[in-house]
Length: 593
Image 1 (cartoon, rainbow, N blue to C red):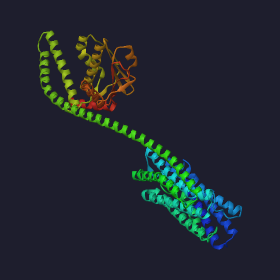
Image 2: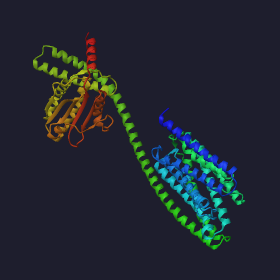
Image 3: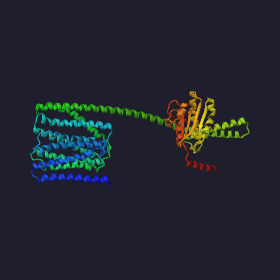
Image 4: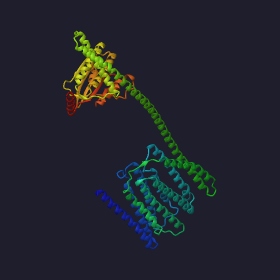
């Protein structure tokens, strides 16, 4: 067993033993000690010690280290705040009965602390730490719950405070306080029951623990209040036994929670948020009727009526500001979703256009594949006749013309082969390729076209370039197309030199096709934008899309300068590994034999 887990288990055992000992001490005192000052002091000290222990147990749960996320930490912070209020009330009670040795006055100003100690606990349940919620939904829901909490504090001030400050009436004060406090406890228990039913895994068991401790406390305090009304209650009586047990249970919950997995969370449930919103709106709607009832009520003195009317109006203003802010958030959220819907609709239209374009390309590829197969037949015949003419005893000038015809036919066949590959009609044949030879062949095939345009070619090719694994016809087609693209731009801009460079950088061969200017040559495409086959949507760039696809199938990439106005392309191809070269040589040897 892990040492930390062992220490934690021993600490929890010690803590639970301490709580059980304090609870048994209360049972023994209530059953064995006679009614009197000693019993009162013993009972108050035991309950105060238990509440202090409970508060100490909750405090470590408020730190980030012991909480897995913000919602969980906020949940424990609010629960701890409720325990601090409860401890403060017990401290005031002990001050009168233990220090001053006198009964707690009635009405008691500290009763508001007892009422308020459940408010942060109810707010802790509103955090819903077992759910994953969007930030916008969380803000709106917290505002809804703030409305409910404001209304609940208003109910206490409306029912209880007038008989404590405006017109002192002990009987009316006790009756209204007990009603408000009992209703508050019922709200807490109902909320815990709903969460225990809807939550899962460790959170369900944690809510069930709070529900059990809260139910025991609510029932025991109700019985104690009944006994106070019948003049049978005194501090330390048997009515305090279940109350003490509920406090001990509450103090044990943080230690018990260590055994639960609270990391799991489920998606937010819209129905819960809808009901919270409905209740908050109903609470706001009830305020004018409460104020009207206070105005028409003739059973109470005028000062109480005026106090209640003023409190109702002030609460309406406060809750109205909250509702205004809530509507502001809803408006911002609505605009956000409208903008998001508009972008989604635009993306959908773009995707539809892209799909249509892809279907057109696929149909065009099939058409090109079929046409290429038909073109291959006459090209084969033309190549055979040109070879026959070159081998015959023709005059030298005519033999040169026949050789040029054969060269152009071979170039056309290479282009057709690349088109077939682009249309997925013919597989690529990989072998070791010398890029110097491919580039020289491309320049030789383009020489007549470049001479007609008045464009010169300058090459800077390293003689020590390693071979690459490629289909020579496909790479030749790519080089011809890229060089032709630059030549067209040179002719348009008036520049007269095409610069081709091949260098090695690590395990990659870099082939640059540039306009021979100092700007583009110095930049050398080191800051470039990578091209993708699907990026080009213009009909004239279908060949460029094919080039991108071919280069990517060879494990390389095709890019262009990121700066605007600099014509150029860079083709990157991986260097052939030794094992690939050996394998290619073996295949070539077997095919030759």
